[in-house]
Length: 485
Image 1 (cartoon, helix red, strand yellow):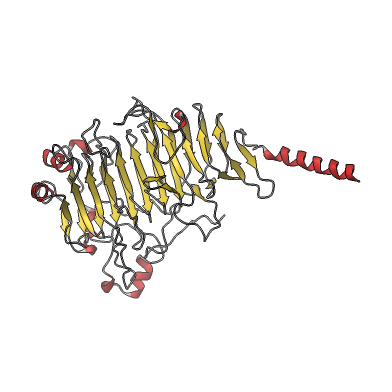
Image 2 (image 1 turned 90 degrees about the vertical axis):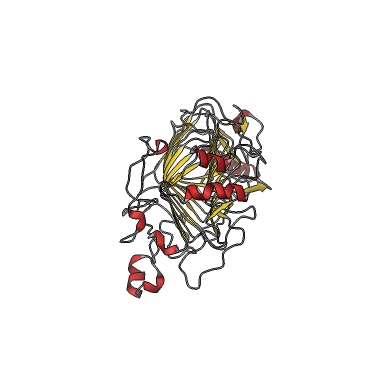
């Protein structure tokens, strides 16, 4: 009897072992859990691999795509990050990701915690590392990954480097905190080159920044940062890419103790003018802060909220044709580092940095929609930002952006039909943001930028419909298409 039991046990082990290898074209670090059917992925992916929508993939620990291979992810595929091991997917230098979803079948990275219990920072996030140029060196450790090998490094000399495709991708509940000032973002780009395609990508409820770029020159269109904990769009270390059509939407009660901003832009942490300078160009962004017209009463805004745009430490970032509303403070040119010499405000004065054709509304909780770190800088930047040539509008009226309608002017039927129950950031009739965008400046003349008439991320078409998620706590919007598996 004992021999028979032993034989039966051995046969079951053989059966489970035969089921343990992934059958999707590669078995690098992949084990199929015989109980759940989930494909558990660990370690390095060293050969070309396909992930398909008929399976759910669970990232355990740091999963590196290495050896110059491509990880291809089919439309509609769900990838989960393991909370206990801080699951993270890292595309290393020379390797590629081909995550090409569709509006009908987005690719979703989410938490492995059961739906309803998921929270910001449940797992690591998505990290792309490239061979582009940054101002720290050609082999730089990426923030949040402790691996000391080349796998966790980014940088090089090729700003046209190609790390693959991200299209119709949603990254939810990522951004795990590993320690003080050592977090993983929703999506991190380390020296990623312009050969990479990034379109229609959402980061939903990240525990740190939504998107952060460290050097490189990757371009992107149609980005969403929804209910981020820290900053929505963070640029550092000489990032020189172009971004058009992006939206940030915040929760009033959620912010990071370090201070949460819509844009945060540094050249380098020490503030010195190390080349190449951070010189990203953003156009047609809609930055909606924690102050919103609904619900009533308006919820208390977390005291850690700071600025719609904090431009500091020798950054030359440019922002144009955008709509900014509902922040406690507006645009801040912070010259605290270095104490002397060139700095972000001086680049605005010289024209190396732009803030043009923007509509800044209701971002005056501290009565300073225009802010600088000292009186001299404030005196220098205010005439430029408010000049006719810059064509910016600063108004304390939150409703002036033409997205929100004054709730006192709503009828109940209009509320139900127009804004409550569906995510809709398109412009209301007569919106001042419907016209006035300009692309005549040399920084905006590049063929990458679509020469639209409207300011902000949307005209009359909602490009988020069907694939994006919104936070139900950030009324008047809901969360269509949220992952429940």
